[in-house]
Amino acid sequence: MANDPNWRLPEVPTFSLTSPDFADGDTLPHWARSSQAGGEDRSPTLHWEGAPSGTRSFALSVYDPDAPTGSGWWHWAVCNIPATITSLQQDAGNPDAGLLPPGAVTVPNELRLERYHGAAPPPGNGEHRYYFTVSALDVERLDVPAGSTPAILGFMIGEHVVARAQLVGVTESP
Image 1 (spheres, rainbow, N blue to C red):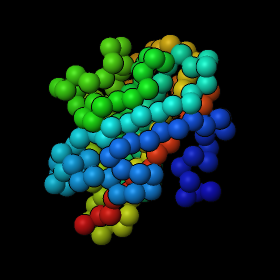
Image 2: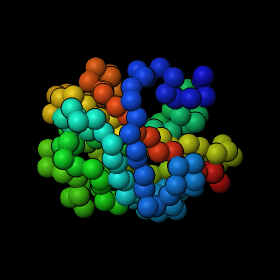
Image 3: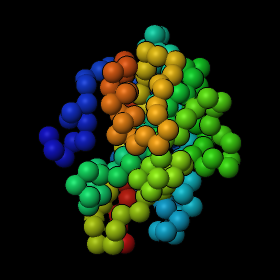
């Protein structure tokens, strides 16, 4: 139970989340690692399908439950993705690329940056799992207060989630 970061989330139906850049349970591409770990902080391409017909928006998060912090590490969190969107292009987590749909809001990650921060497990810390989660919501938008953390966003998602899709990538620490 404690090894599964989903054990406290509400049980909801699932739908499909895939990436052409890595398969579920496989290693993330090197470019998806943090620039501090020799990568490019580039978010992978994501595709989802099968969300319930009542979906009015999506929220996305990337979470590492294996970070040696006692609370994991949030790498990226976005809400207010319109229900008509079913994919994000590679590097959508880079605000300079302008690839997120209009109206989408990025919540600051653990480094307090409003962008994707790539995988960077500390040396000698073993394998880390990165949970890419897309939540289908029953509202068009969440009014997330400025400066909120991904944990606050998670509370707000919990009140409106109707389905969830997940894809897990892994990275070995140096």
